[in-house]
Figure 1: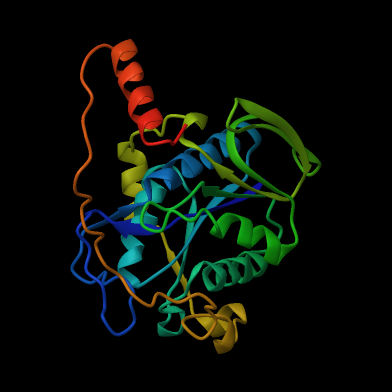
Figure 2: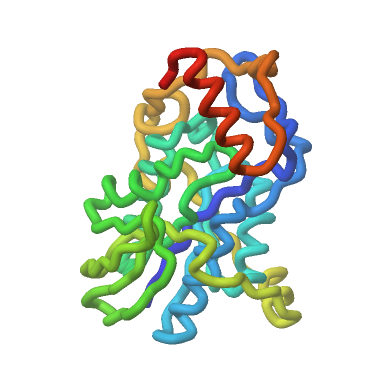
Length: 262
């Protein structure tokens, strides 16, 4: 099986800085990590390879420093790594990012499963995985918590979380899946995989290498724009209720009734 895991390198801090001209994150000089949700996608890809054979290719789009995240993914068990890095990609929103990643996956070719974390901790949109599936015209299953059964080249059966429990879905292969942290426990890198990561070959593709026209990527290919970024003012007032749960419930009911809310 050929498995592609799409990851993102995100800032390892909560107090990030914003470029006032472009309203995008300033990543230079900021400590970065693999998006935590993506580590579960890497682990699941490695487990599938261990069971069915094949190759795990980890793919990301970002500046040259994103190579660090890719090598960490190889330490976690991935086999190959591809970096999309080009000034033309700068400022891409989720649509432009999905388009570029889909174009890269199309270039890789003969992919059986595409795995993504459910969302990135810096954007929290959860849109890139579905976007990739749309651009590649592939089946999509989101919030996967367990892979029940796989018939290589034919189908996959999974459990996907919902608000009340989970649903069981069956999809033909190839397909795209986004996974949640309940799916596994990522392993610690071994000495062997750390040595492998140091010598692993990095493949770097620019926009022209994946056939991505300038109007489909970067700021030009991003229909969404950030017009203003600010920290909301803390709310003033409010009231803290005291007592047992039953007493606080009675107090809340009385106050809501007094204000004609109920």
